[in-house]
Image 1: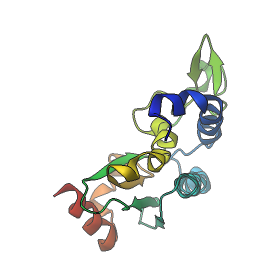
Image 2 (image 1 turned 60 degrees about the vertical axis):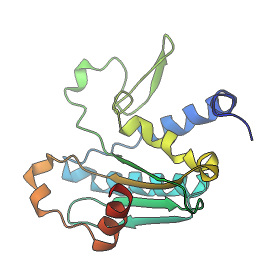
Image 3 (image 1 turned 135 degrees about the vertical axis):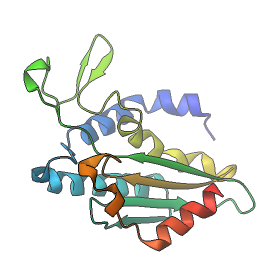
Length: 174
């Protein structure tokens, strides 16, 4: 097996292309007109998790936006790692402050610019999708991605997450 650094460098162009593809989706959870984009982003995450080797992938409806749940539990007796994050972004306004279009990722001076690139979660989603290529030998994996911010429209107290997802997450965390 290739070590992680070699894998990353050897697939750099492909990973950058995948990230840019993801960042072109205007998955703005705070704006109702972007609901189809949120759903497209959830499908993108699910498809990429599947392509990377996660065995079980679910797009789970909620009363806000869908969750994407995935697991690869091929390492019996080994610890389970849970990745938790989000696949949505905040609105890009004011648009006149952008040097390049917010949803058209652009490389300038070796840096990638676009909505979601500098977010600790959103920009990391494509990278986490590739974890099963290395992890099954030493750990089991679960991933839960939400399509909304905890502060979205003050609706978090109304969020209903299906019990089978929360049970799996509690099994991992506890």
